[in-house]
Structures are given as C-alpha cells and as structure tokens.
Length: 140
Image (tube, rainbow, N blue to C red; front, top):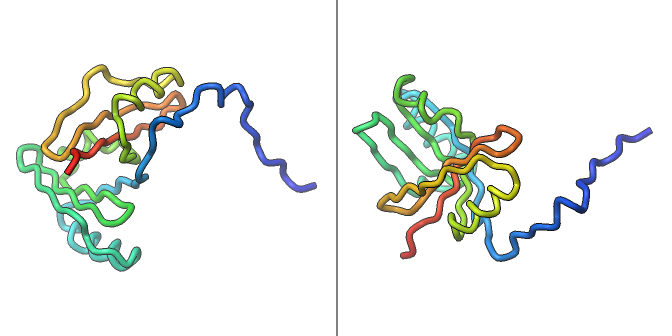
C-alpha cells in the first residue's frame, strides 16, 4: 500500500498572507574562517552564480557572503555560537506584516525590528522550534 500524503486541515488556511510575500528563501551555512574562500568558490560553482555580496562584521568576528541561495557565515566558534541556531533566512517584502502573521500562527516574534544599513530584520522561532531570520531589504 503506497504511503498517504499528509494533508493540512483547511482551518490552517483561514488566515492568508496574500498581502505579503517571501521573495527569496536562503540557507544559512556556518564555516570556519579558513574554509570561507573555498566555501564561496564551491557554492558559486554549484549554483553557477557569482558571490553577490561580502560583508565583514569585525566587531563580532563574523564574515558573511551571499551566493545564490546560501548565506555563508565565517567565524570562530565563539563568534558563531550566538547565531548558529538560525537555520534559514527569508527575504520578505514586509517584516512588519510577516511579524503579525507569524504571531497569529504561534511563533515567538521579538517586539523590536533590527535596523541595518541594508535593511530590517527579525529572528523568529516558529511554533515547531525552527529558527529563521526574516529580512526586508532597504528600497534601492
């Protein structure tokens, strides 16, 4: 007998997010500083895409590169420990609207949005324990 596909109950569809969008879903991958350049090269070759952006956060000891669907974060163990629990990032059109939607669906959402030079973000723990960053880029 073939396995049955799980179907979510229709009640979960009662609240829609038709007014907000996830523009891009991204994996977060943590590497040592020694692995950073080779990891960038690997994910460029894997996806046939060049590194879009490299950022340095010397105050916390973390280097960041964005390559296609991957956010590569490099640092020593002490630098990465505070952020290693975040498993994915969603680029969204409105952090504020997603914050409301996520709260109504049982997520642990902080009250303060972090403002950065490139956009706004929240780190959210979903009701099932999955932790993701929601990022709204600054309009160009």
